[in-house]
Image (tube, rainbow, N blue to C red; front, side, top):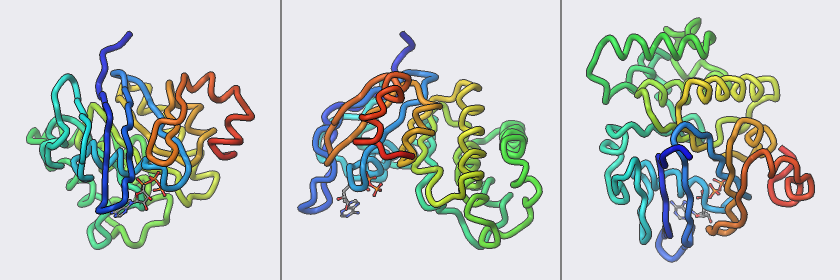
Length: 239
Ligand code: ATP
């Protein structure tokens, strides 16, 4: 078994009176792709944001490479090698593609490493290379999503957190995004991915957790879950 990169135990997240996450347990082994699935409002985004230091943790623990990061702020989490590509393509609309990418490398001091991250991003996403001088607000939905993922990659993360990378995209663009995620996985980056598009996600994942109303509902190797068509339809959506 590979070492555990990320381990979550008994995670509870509250927003005032709303208990969004009610005791979630989750492990992500080094070099694996783990999917976090479930219906709208199941607590997936809250869990991801808690790892990044962006959701308030009421109880439970989050550890990364053996270190407790439960209450670490977002910048410190990034410096430890964790980067999140947010839902909704939250990029800087008035910056160019290249400027947006540069903001993703704010924790990286070495110019050589920043240059090699640019090369890697432009290799994964040639469309972004073509549009490097364009302002982000002029990009299509698919290109914005690519930019959000690429910006997270600029930090050279050892753990990449992806929130709904296929949300609202045309099927061909979705194929493109999943092809690139498979490449990122092949390069050995550990990935935790939140997705509604369950079938596509299970194809690139090693293991999956399904959350329901803030709790662990079921889990298993992705190869097993994908075989269980009744389960896929009932719990995971047709993707
Ligand atoms: P989705 O796919 O819709 O994003 P999700 O599984 O990611 O769903 P969360 O976004 O984590 O679920 O939301 C879990 C619950 O917490 C929902 O009931 C949601 O309305 C609530 N919630 C999320 N963020 C906040 C917030 N900032 N303030 C109050 N309630 C919130």
